[in-house]
Image 1 (spheres, rainbow, N blue to C red):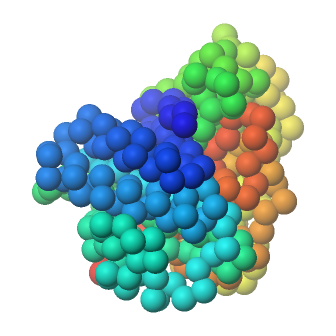
Image 2: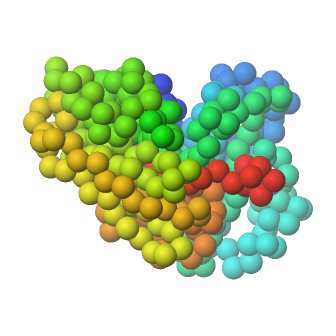
Image 3: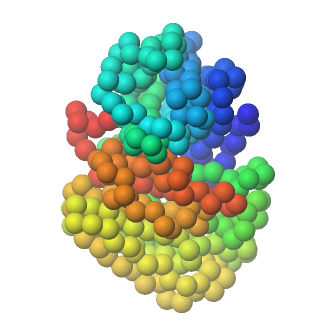
Length: 351
């Protein structure tokens, strides 16, 4: 089993732990437990992480016919987000499966009910015959979420390197924006170290001007990337007060909005950021309160439709990101998918 570490700082990168069979459960537990220790989890909390990972990995191996654990640091390095995905037979009775103490695998933690009880945030999505995705959020004791109050978005993110590459040529960031939080994805041309350098340069440009419009951020990136091989880039600004998403993109970054009234796409312009592009055009699209924004690089196939997954829009965005990654990963390039929606009140949020 290989442990991938992909993406670009300062945003948090996705570690992909493949669990093909039962023999790899122990290695998955050790890998994620080491990460929790690096983040400052004490022995008791690391033990809690170990039980959750054991249950998730066992389910993936025994019931999902193999799958992956997608792990990233969240909440300013105070927490771990773990999403287990598989393409197995799915769960016919989700309510029964998450009942505490119910386990068909005979594991010490007693199944998904234990995962829900031990997690600081939990959600699940399953389709009979198509697979399952399970989210477990683990936080350090007394840790707060410094970003939650200011960004007002729930996010799901997967960012992984191309096969065989040490670093990812994609990068993403969320900044304050002009009228609301702005999400940027930068996809350096090609992959490997040169693409990584271009992506990081784009992210650093956003950090230097965090309260700018999408078109201004793209223009700043264009100047910053002139010494690199160039990139595709896009910025989506979520203005919850106006009920709109403003978008600007150059190159093959895809952006779509799915709400109660259907799905709409926002178009990127032709060109290469840092090399050649015309005047940046900004588009605006109204959104309903429950709408979901999906942005991704070309490492994800564009043929997805979120409404083909009944109920997924209502689940935590981390599940939507993981399902799209699972089902539409091209597998030959860096891949980033970001799913966002307006944050719901804490008492009704899965996390």
